[in-house]
Length: 176
Length: 166
Image (cartoon, rainbow over all chains, first blue to last red; front, side):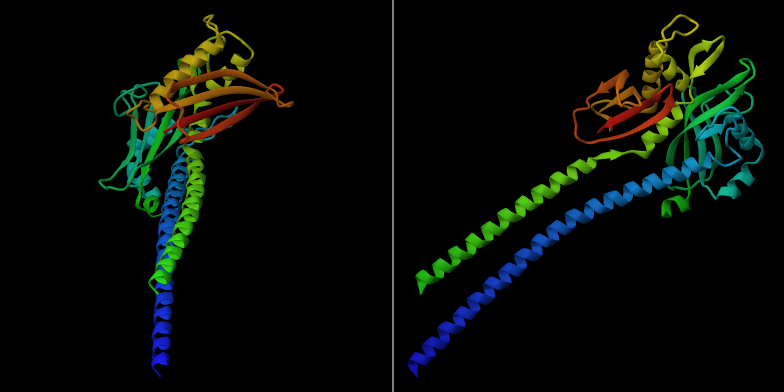
């Protein structure tokens, strides 16, 4: 009887040992898995963010393709080209209509090269750098995209193009 | 009994150490693979390359009408000169420096540490001719973004490529 008790107690200890080892393994693999998953998730989050940025940039650039702003050149294809003359007219005449049309909170064009400075108006145009089309007081993130800014130079009798950036912000862009 | 317990603990420690080593090796491989993800194609750079094509330069190839960047690239390949007598490739290089300088802030303290801009002519036989290579800052980092653009010219294509290093 005594021997039976001793054997039973040893068996219980063995079972306990096995249980502890199994628990330790489970905890170890769970921690390792969590560690690996957190790494993978942070990477995926970065990729999603980059994808969203690209989509926003594409959306901003697509504004330059609308008839209200597009540069129409008869002799060549011009991708992502904005007509600066149209832009300056829209700034003065149709700002409110323009704002309603695209539901934008901010929309402006900046001439990057050649270097110029100041907000454009009809008097100083084209010797200026920025044409603000919409400017509402909101805090949404600004997205930008490189564009070509073209206008007709009557002195040269030819088109002149600058390198520029179009900036836009809207609730819709943020939520995309 | 005591000796047996010690053996079991030693066995458990060995198993844990082995599993840890395998895990570290797998993680190392995984992180190494992720570092190459830093070499990304950039939509912003593609838009930049597409947009500079149209930019009017200071070089007039025919009379008084200034040529755009795309025409200047072709003229550089042909080793032509502008009506001012300056070689097209020189005007191209100067314009490019100004454009890149206006578009990006480069420096050791800036987000972008350096850039590498190349212009190549590739013909149908896949032979390459380097027309221009413009570098600034430090571009030795493995983290960069790049893109390229091309258009047909003569019997081949002219490629422009920009790499921004972070």
